[in-house]
Length: 228
Image (cartoon, rainbow, N blue to C red; front, side, top):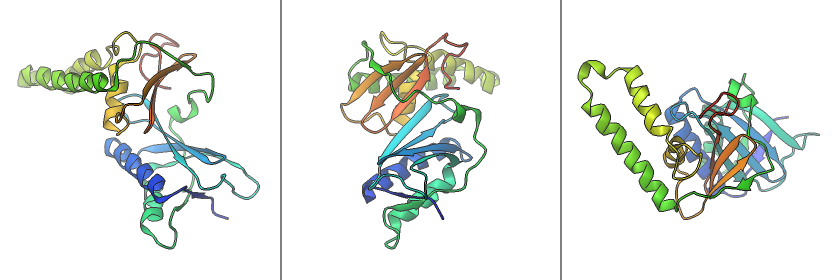
């Protein structure tokens, strides 16, 4: 028996496919962890350029069901999953239905995910337009500072140093690093007017109507911006 996901509509599958395509743009060998319970699918990924954990959910037409299993928790190739979801969008015969690819050995981050509950709202997050402007200014600053470097200093170590300085800055009066907002913008999450900052234990989560970005708080567990 092949495990299948029945999406609520073609739009859910198409939006998920767009997210997976963006994720693969930053890592062609990306893996994603899938968790389905009831009528919701959660997809977790980690684009290496941003060192954050990204979460995209999709509505299912009916509760997940695979034989006697009523929940799904598996790590798969993002590229293979994109192919299956893409087929569910384009195929008239399999409209809205995607097969779950075979499991792969998951990367270390896939074993340490944010908690499902216990989230509380944190103050200090600027309005969405201000956050988008902040990301735009940070990108412009990074490019300008790189252009100012003499050719012999434009090496990976120097670019990483400049990047760490800029992307590790906090967003306004919060503990959220700018890299989290940058990731949200790049993954297509930072749209619309719904933007909330949440915390649960050592985790911070930037939630939008299109997805979430999670990081650990600076200085907790010896980690600054990585999720695992």
